[in-house]
Length: 503
Image (tube, rainbow, N blue to C red):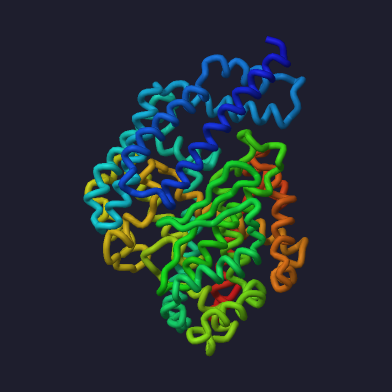
């Protein structure tokens, strides 16, 4: 086959692939936001069928030779070789799986999500338990088709953060535990920061109005390329540079929940929006890894969104929206409150300091589920025990415990560790960014997009063109070092709580 013939076949295949991916993405967004629950069975069956059609395109036996030719051809430019190489890797993983098995898994995954929703509504882990068991067995079976000699969970970790395994994460979490746990203990014994004013009644309609008219415009989230909806578990999805969808969840008794959820998800959206448009419709038009993606959302949520300069620009309007609740609360009091640290049961509501421990618990559970030391049966009891031992928290019920996260309902094992890794990536990026631009100046002057411009130039624009270590070297000028993250946490919370061991 001539190079031109290979390119023509490849481009046609890639277009059909992206069309099905777009359709399924939009269907999934609808399912997780506004779709009526009673129509789930009908939708799930047809969604599984469409997933099967996409699978047939992905595993077309004629495409692997084409991908191999393109990835190995010196006549092809570097971008296209990288693109073909990634497609070749992903396609090879799929071709070993029988189509009927893949479709059956998709049906089981959709049914598992529906069961998770029902379990949350009923606050009953028993409703979800058999589906979790099913997802574990499905993943063992699907990864088993690959004939990979590595441990199944190592393969899963590598799936979300290429190049990582249990050895990598064991080392990473050991370093975190050694320095974070003692710091948390010191903070717990310190004078608590008053956060009571954040738990008053804040009418949801007013929260929505403030978010839509003040917060989203400040964040530069333009309706020309982005849209926000509501869901049970906030997420971000996208189809191309100019079609990014985010979601949030409003709680009347928790003002900052939707605020920081919005900042977090818009961080994901900015990453996708800023990827070079020349990659649209290809495998390069997405974040390079889950950890890298999470670094961008966590950077926006915490390293920018919880700072005094950020709120200097926004707090006056928030006070105007909620005068009775916030009139007597100063800017400084508010910022201290949104940074306060205290052990809690819910990951998405956790502060920066205790957040990594939530991830450690999930990592240890996942590792146990796949090495046989833990069972999904009565896993809610194991969950509660680990929260008691590591965070000193008594979990009240399944909804705020094992049913709080959606990830396991579709078999996304190996994903959770990237949340902590992403937070660590963000610290290193933030260190470099502050050396090069006046971050606080831009935030105070409502020039949030100027900060995004630095991220676009140094991280976002590349999409998946380079791997995560490569992006780290390009943006930070050095290899990944978790020390930046640990130093950041120690410095921030030692100062916030006036600890003697201030760094």
